[in-house]
Length: 328
Length: 286
Image 1 (tube, rainbow over the protein chains, first blue to last red):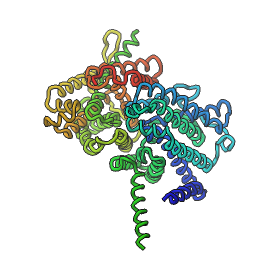
Image 2 (tube, rainbow over the protein chains, first blue to last red):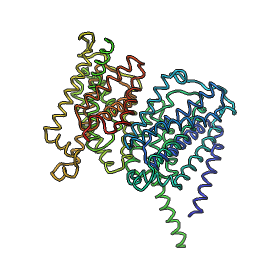
Image 3 (tube, each protein chain N blue to C red):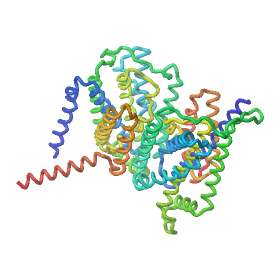
Image 4 (cartoon, chains in turn yellow, brown):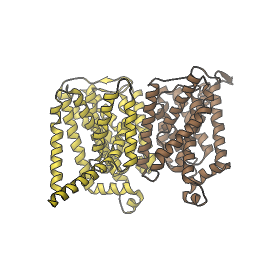
């Protein structure tokens, strides 16, 4: 069984790496793949704070926007290449996360109220950046140096795809590593029952803050790349729909399962984008109607996540296969 | 000084409507501990329905609640039995996921049915304005605020004087004990959810007398009503009015003295500060 896992993992890595060769001449396909991976990275990072620590964070857009704006502004003002800028963006997101997380966790804001306050945070930043005309303002600020690899402004989607692949494997690895570490056990314990965990000696506040900081760093980093992909920065990057969607992908995929949110992202985002591509045009929002219905159905009938459904079917098929082989 | 009074009057009148919207949210959250992320979008749907009634049936916006109230009531009961009832025993994350799905659904339906353009009704019976001292008062806003206060009082009476109302409060206080004395839990929850949704119909109708509606409004009203609820805490109806007025005034002052775009910024900042400093609300019972 263990060998099988390693083989299938290697197969998956290989598949992800060679996928662009099938889409070489298909620009739309590459955009689609990159978008799916982008959401995959965000949802996987969300798994640390949302899935393991059980804090329903709806502020992915805040950290994404901060990363994007830091990277973009550094490039626009100081001509600093995004290859460095995205890391600065990640650090800014971390600083903001600490600034927000300290009082939030100090005053024990949790569950619903944590979700709502993080959701309000995204809107606060969006409006603040629209009003802050030196950096943001209501118009797009376009990034220069299109086509220059030195400035991460590729003219094709393939390099972006590989950057997303790296980010994805990094965040998957961080996820896996945390879930095997002391911090991971703390997070899972406090996600289940905060008071009980505290009584047993888990430092709830600092564990939550660590989770938030790691999550913010990955999302901030991704935000920088996001700005380069789109080629501009705009306060609408602080997006509430995106933030809730990231959390939803994590929940639908399966909270606390390392690759759960990735599965959620791959299935739902590709479904959404394909629906949009086929139904767009005359009936603009029909795809969102179908998308939300599917979402509700999955949550209602598989509250533990769609990944568990796949696992169950896989186990069933696998055990039948083993049984058949032994019977022969 | 005159400008301040004018802003405060406008803000306070808006605040009464916010209190009415929040009353619906508070009923749902207080009774079944369900976080309804779609509440703001129910307000948005109500406003669109008022727009429909107004433009196709020629009904005045202020009278549309007569029709939209029962419709939203039924919609609320439908939502309860279809979605909420199945998730009551789940983790809160699942409940939020379901209502977020509902939120996306309502917003998409609104975009599909009414496109993304803002809509407004051309006229209302209760238009015009008059002068008190130095402040100009829009009749439509004044009447909307009065209707909101009246409805809030009626709901308070319903909750304290009638059998179904008392059942709602009993279920909210102690689910097991209330089932022991013969309260039907499911029906009471459905009633509370229906009533909570139906209250948005009144707010929506009144808002349409002086405002336009667009599909993104749900987010604004959603967070706004959560802000008012956070400020109030649970179980205080007079506190609801006070918090609504505080939020309305803060919004109006920010609009007048800082920047029109800052109105929501101030509301959200209040919200975050209240959550950090007074997580149980200022006027709350629980």
